[in-house]
Length: 554
Image 1 (cartoon, rainbow, N blue to C red):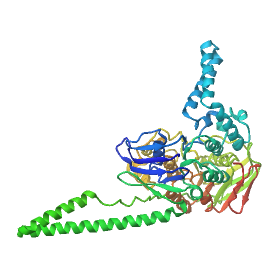
Image 2 (cartoon, rainbow, N blue to C red):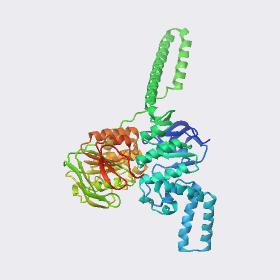
Image 3 (tube, rainbow, N blue to C red):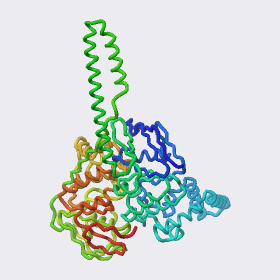
Image 4 (cartoon, rainbow, N blue to C red):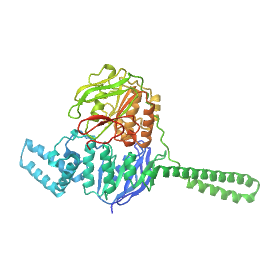
């Protein structure tokens, strides 16, 4: 019976800070456990321990069954082929054999000597022995389900031609159809469109596999998770609390737990004070009455044992994120598109977005939504100097016909869905804020630290951007938009990696933002807060709808 058993796991960061302290939980046979908690609390780290990729400093992890892992950043792959993408979630031995086959095939292009031919023949034999051909049969089913084509027809297709959602769907198809009994899924719903998310919810409900997943999609958690494993913040090291029910009852149960912990701590403090008062009273009395000495010593022993046992668990730290998105006044017409056609993706369409409006761009994966945001982030078809994007980010050009223009004083600020920022890679957060860029003034260390603290990133100030979790990278991107003075926010799936508290803070920040917001989203809760909706359908048409409509490919 496949299960996951984590017992008394502890882990300290290289700088000495305890990240996880005495973490214990169990995921039973066929259960779907959702791992939730603040960004940077250690969810992905805990997942690495469960997978065996990392080893904890203390404690143990036991998985009774074959384990398959889907990393958080599946969907970011830009190099390689569809076959390479599927190999990322294949057994390690098959990945090794596949790499050897590729190496031999390249070598034979240069020289077909006997030694290379023998290595190649042995690699082909190993591929069959370790189940490679059986796996290709599964892959054929997966590519038909996700892409509508046989594996042999798409195996050499560049993975960069697939959208993030298409990559995720293909990998998930492989995992659910594979022989592995335990699935570890880190943000499996990211990049999926709404039909894809509903498909994932159904797969999780129907599958007999034991699943541990990380997700911030409340709709998915409510529909599929059988219990919730919550990583709670603590100065002494984050701990875990397990809610043995669905996400629908999680918040109420957590509030009741917090109330109980507060009551227990209050009672402990009262008892502690009573014992200290008793000891002090008996100490005074024993000074004048030898007969009270024994009672005084007994009271001291009682107090010592009480303090040695320690207080009950402290109430976990609540998140407090404050996003101050300011913006500024612009021309009445912030964005004007006339007969705009995204090459190979959409038919010509017209669009006007007025100052202060919130426009949600909806549709399936691969329909061109992100391309539209990138075009606007570049400043449109023929950008003026004032329309250059905020920051040093390099944005790939977007092939198009027709025109897209930004209004006067419109300064675009782009939130990249994949969080891939070469301009930030290898630099610490404090260094990035200190140096500034062409539109963002540099900040002294103290103001920079205060800004990071508002986003609960102060403790990560000396970390490099590329070492942060997906949610921390997302929060930092939003901070740069705040500091850069953008008046047009172009948000590409901003809530994908944000924890629930951060998503709420983002919504509050957008409500107060003095400017225009255009967002691509598949977050059903987030979309409800917008006042206009543009549906980019799978047939290439783009039209406005009265409310959120989930159609398109995927």
